[in-house]
Length: 146
Image (cartoon, rainbow, N blue to C red; front, side):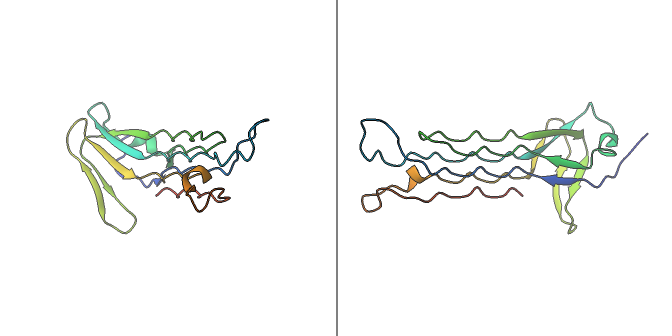
């Protein structure tokens, strides 16, 4: 079956939250903040391929979602960034958003277009340390993906 028009919901991954944590060791008095940053969310990338000739696989797969970023952790451990979702589409594919604006025109083999950008990860409390504010109890939330 040949399918040349599809309506697909695309969403990029959200960024991970930063962590609020403090060092806890037996002989370290007032150890200080050590919360890690959150990881970035994954992007949704369309890749033009000569091996594809129809959009039939989107007939039953109506949503495309990239992986979300992981939250930060103690000991200044950063969260893992989400993997990008690469979707092969036929050469000549034109991507149009809901408002009617053209996002991409994939006209040759191997061409890549980022359709939705992932959210950035939030900073942990170790990021907000200064000489005045030595023990911050605040961390940022991750930004949502497009």
